Image (spheres, rainbow, N blue to C red):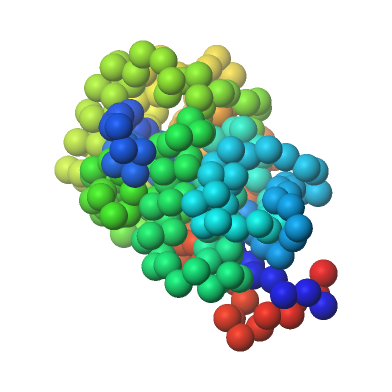
Length: 285
């Protein structure tokens, strides 16, 4: 029996986004919208003699997690477990960073607030170049709309008041850092138009339709994703590309109806949370 702390962080699929840079990484980020998913990452933190990070049993280097631990002055072992595809637009690195922040704070009694911890995780993600808006979306859960960029201490949030069954299927990876690290003027312009459309009609259907249009206008949609989204539409469903990956996300049973074999989940209603009560300090290995 070992003292541990554990957090669950939902996966997050971005439908569209802007790239908003700032010298302060906690003020940088993106505007946009997406879905928090009931499939996510469970992050367990234990005391250790040296920092170690694993994901699904494999030793990994996740810069955002390392930055979080540096900020919290923590020497711990961080273990992530997830069924989500890695590098395919589900916010796994953001989930690891946010989960590590929440669990480490609990384990070591750092006495920081949820927003303070999420701000640390968000800034770490921005500095690592692995995400701009996943952490704040994962913190809030549901169908978050990021009206202003930055961490929870700086941004402005809203949400689509809806829940849904969600299906997704991944056909490959795309590099987030390569996309957000290059010329993003066209991406941001397309993201602003998509955000304006969603704010005028905040529904799941408008989010998905705006995301599809964004992926075309920003020249991000791949041939394979376009083919699958078209198949779903022809079967009477609603689907779009998950940013940033060769991933298709559909509402309801859209992918199943089109003849695919997707993973099924739902919109996560609560957002990131500690799994075990604070008083339970002795979870089994």
